[in-house]
Every structure is written in structure tokens, then in C-alpha cells.
Length: 113
Length: 115
Image 1 (cartoon, one colour):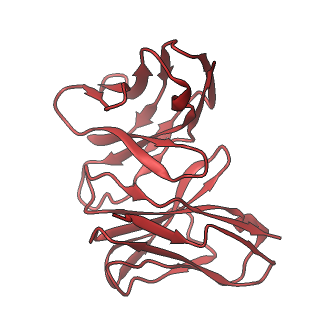
Image 2: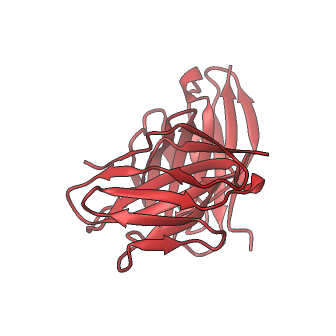
């Protein structure tokens, strides 16, 4: 099983450029999440989705957008890249909330120069 | 509001020695508790979780964690570490109430096992 797949693995952007980080899962999970991980800061939730067509903001949503048109896919969009968005981005999914653990992709390492 | 504190950012330990990674949380309601492990250039993997019942939970690779409600702690322990345990470990908490979708993470503890 592939689990949660993120593409690309690495990317360098110039300030002001835009890009979409892709995330797809093959476990038929309703819940999907986007986190960013900065050194010494742990993981911060950017956006999450509880099902197709439903998204909500997390702790640090500014500068990002998401959509959820299918159960499998949950892309994260950066419209105007800024140096502060240099980070490692993780996508995760879970079958539900509460006691259900999250399954993570391998991450996208993004540098904004 | 929830918060998770991992006081030790780095823990060096010699191979075959015991280790404890500390995790404390704050919440006004019941919680679910998780430990995740992250190996270099990989995503987080679930190590173990506490849902209810016995306060001691174990993983398949020798780690265990004990839930202490009075001290609001969920420390991770292993009696004898291996080189392969070198990784970053994250404690995470989710509240047990309707609408609590967010999983709150600590800042992580980097465990380095020294040969």
C-alpha cells in the first residue's frame, strides 16, 4: 500500500512565485491535514479537511489555500511565496478523529529564495 | 487550550542504556495521547497511543509510555536503546470531545544513541 504520497519531495521557489504541493492517499480516509515543520517548533497545522468539499483553517493558515474535490486528494496552494514559508510540509490522513492516529507522507522540503 | 511540552530538545544516550523522553500536556478535558517517531528525511510514524484503560502502553520495538493523569504526563521509556532508535520523537495530544479535530504536537526530542 502506498499510504500517503506527497509530491514533489524538494522544491526551490523564488519570492512571489506560486506552486501547489500535491497529496494523495489510497486508504479512503475522510480526514486529511497539512502541517508545516520548522526546526525546534514541532508541527503546526495549516489546514484540514473532514471530507470531500469541506475544509477548515488550522493554526497557521495565512498564505496558503486548499481544496478537497475528491476523498483521495488534498492539494496545498502557495499563491505568493515568501521566505517565511521555507519549511518542510507534511500531509497526513486519518479515518476519523478522536483516538484515530494520523498517517503521514514523507514530506516536501520547500525553500523560498 | 491544549498545549504539549517536551522539555528536552536533545537527549544523547549510550547504546544499551535506558532512556526516558518526557512529555507533559495541559487540557481541561479527557485526552488521547500519542507518540510519533521521525527518522531522517521521513514522515512521522505512530509509535504508540493511549486511548483508555491500562495506563501503561507498549510498542512492538520495546518502547513503553505511561499515562499519569494527576501529573498530566505521558513519558516515553525504553530500558535498553539501540543505534537504530536514533530519531526525533514527538508527543501529541487530542482532546476527547466532539469537534476536536486538531492534533497538537510537542516541539520534539532528538534522541541520539552513541555507540
